[in-house]
Image (cartoon, rainbow, N blue to C red; front, side, top):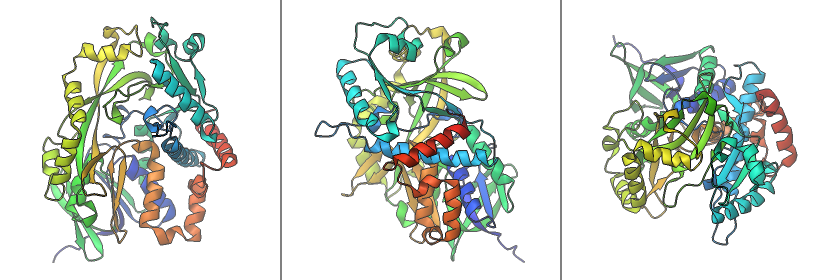
Amino acid sequence: MMKPIPKIDIALIGGGIMSATLGVFLKSLMPHSSIYIFERLELVADESSSAWNNAGTGHSGFCELNYTPINSNGIVDISKATNICSQFELSKEFWAFAVENKLFSNDFISPVPHHSFVTEENDVEFLFKRYQALSDHHLFRNMGFTSDIKELKAWVPLMMQSRDLDKPIGATKMNLGTDVNFGNLTQNLFSYLKAQENTALFLHHQVLDIDRSGDLWELEVENLLLKEKIFINANFVFVGAGGGALRLLNKARIDEIDGFGGFPIGGKWLRCKNEKVIVQHRAKVYGKAKIGTPPMSVPHLDTRFINGKRELLFGPYAGFSTKFLKHGSPLDFPESIDFDNMLPIIETGLHNIPLTRYLIDQVRMTFGEKMNGLKEYYPSAQAEDWELVAAGQRVQVIKKDEYGHGVLEFGTELIYTNDHTLAGLLGASPGASTAVAIMLDLLKKCFPEQLQSKEWKETLELLVPGFYQNIPENEEYLIKSRARTSSVLGLS
């Protein structure tokens, strides 16, 4: 007699920040639901959510110059910065709820000022225009700007050592900036989930296939330790497998994934080994990407807190690999190409020659050339104080535009079926910082009826009260929310 296939309510594929956040949301909203989480590695948060594999910047538009382009009228467009900042406020609200209600302790977020820093006359003029546009909005009301050498030495003393002070210099500062250890945060969320009834985390388990089975989704899962396969039926499936999401969404054979492809880009950091240098810098300082380079190339000199230790990193330096995951296969990229996405991928390659040149140049860079990049930010840097360490692997989204042509996107893309039973996330930046907003968007798309219920509304008002507020328009609410989250999370 054939053994019946176990049936569950929710399957989450991938042990990263997205699955962890969605899992806590769904368990809070549907406490009696059964939730299985599948992760192919031996640890959760060991890919994109790992502290070494992302920038750790609580992305809030404070310092990222690529979020504030100048439009055709010469006006600084702050719409993307205000959107991302509002989304990060939602993340802080959810994390504050978790800490305040003792779901877990706060070992994942630290106050670290966010700076923008430029050294050319035109860039200083742009930075001042950006400062004027942002500081006029209540989300950025406390931003500071300076080109005064004395003040710059107080803000970023390490970066002013041995610097040519005859050149124009400008910087902005937001004291409300943060460093977030998304690895610790993800582990905390999963630790909470594992302790809940009808919830299980399966490590060393890889989802091989996803198929329709009537009104359910059937998952073929391999136990990588025992080399045994199991089959699971689920009412709802979320594919939050980072670079592995594209493959699984294609396996599910859903129409919504047609035409999507992925382009992998790796990264490396310069890591400081000298404690005397590390303690002289407590800031996240973002510069301006060189003309023709992609958004992820924006250089930054960052204070980080990783594994209980203060770190100082500079980068990222890009690399190219055909792997879609740091622990992936060289065949990931070629095997992702099929009849539906072949043309968009080819078109994207033809239209992004500068990106190809940039990647080639980055791969060919010597350690000395990488140090020269660091010296633009920290002129007195010594090579013996630094080492090169691997960062994460990101898969940028390739999709069809409104005219059917292939384009490369540097954001995130939420894919979901018309019947709302399967969803997946593609893409990278700003990623983890906006996980809460992205998963709230998923709830809107996949659980629209439940979202209208009194029970769900009351629960979400506790978890993320700003979900029901217009943060970019409501200064009074923002002031109250920031006061609470800063107090609970120790960001004052």
